[in-house]
Image (cartoon, rainbow, N blue to C red; front, side, top):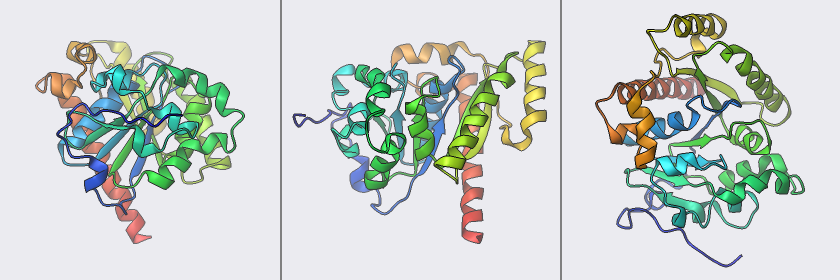
Length: 287
């Protein structure tokens, strides 16, 4: 492959990997649900933005061939010439695929159209389930958090994310079949934990597209909280038109309309996530 470099959106921004500690071990969270349309990408993008707003250095890895996380963060297609596909196949180093966004402390490894073929190509590669993990171990230092936006399936791309991750965040739409769908993901997480990643855990479950005017939403929320207990975040993400509009402007809703109900919800969610992460670090020190 010919040598190329991605052009950052903000050419005056200092490259995060150059200023962050080279010895920092990031916390890696996979945002996953095999069901599409549950707010997975929206959660990834806005959680990353909220973390960056409190000076956490965040890298988003767009593992979805649709590339919606890249688009939502304003990454033009001309800046995706080196993307996660090239990292997974070994054609590029991880650092070569990183593109800074206009949001301070937040960068992206984008998706590309060629990622759709990666599922088939990975089958014949050595350590096919651990390609992302190997790339991150060798070059992933210098970040506080790495958030992986998984595709809406349980194939090799999602498997790579789960093998590389420390924990999984599950966005769950407040609808009737939500619990049935999440049971498949939970079983997959348990299989990955048993076979490839013994420390993998569910960091939390976030209810999305909640409509407090709808009795069904309240029933689903009650069932999910009863079943998963403390794993469910207190914060819920409401149905909100500003959340829906933001991606078409290439912006997270936190940038598009900070005062919206959706923005406030994602700020609250980030606070909960960071609190859990702080508690987790404290347990690690105690151990």
